[in-house]
Amino acid sequence: MGKKTNIQLMVDGRRIDGRLPEQLREIEMKIGEIENADGSARVRFGNTEALVAVYGPRSLFPKFLQESDMAILRVVYSMAPFSVDERKNPAPDRRSIEISKVTKDALSGAVFLEEFPRTVIDVYEYIIQADGSTRVTAINAASLALASAGIPMKDLVAACSVGKIGDVLIVDLCGKEDNYSESDMAVAMMPSKGLITLLQMDGRLTKEEVLQLLKKAEENCKKIYEMQKKALLEKFKVVGED
Ligand code: UDP
Image 1: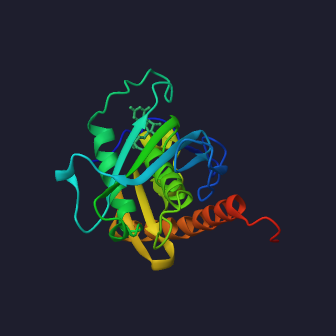
Image 2 (image 1 turned 90 degrees about the vertical axis):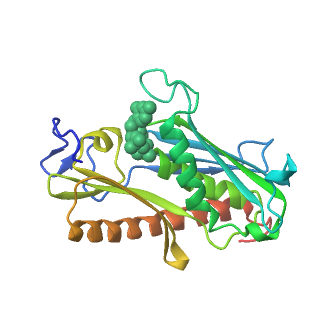
């Protein structure tokens, strides 16, 4: 189904926040700010900001929920009441339940769950500011939080959004673009393995545009992946090492 397109999102080749079509917003990644958590990360793409805390692996109760040969990854995505203009009810709604599920699926393949049978790894994702692309921002933060908890991983998961305004393809959609552009796609990847772990699309695209957008998503996930590795290296650099 098409989306609402009644506001002008592109003027003279620039987007409403002044960016070029393929320009990411300013990105910030911070690791380890939540002392009580086993791992944590805060990731900001422009005015979208996700804070993620990871607890575990820890014993899972009640016991009947346990998997005898692997850990369970439990993901909760939620938006803070103050994250959007109108107060957001913090109770889980259909959207947050769906995002929690797809985020869990996007991350599960990257974690060596089989190393921790009968346990649970809890991932709490809070959106503290929302201005588009919150699920991908939260996935980037969750991946860093899992790694910073010392949980063995096959790869980091890097994610970004891509879309279309008129016939121009764009990356990293802000809130208005998310709501009013012709189309948007959320993509998560395990870049070093070349695997896509999340692919969601809204709006209308031709098959060729889908392929072009996937290519742009891959290019940008790789850029984000490099930033994630840099943030981890900076945090865990051994003292005395250059
Ligand atoms: N949004 C909002 N209130 C809500 C849900 C979403 O204002 O209850 C805004 C927010 O800026 C969000 C955007 O709409 O980033 C797009 O939401 P969508 O469901 O497409 O998910 P996202 O792109 O954030 O992963």
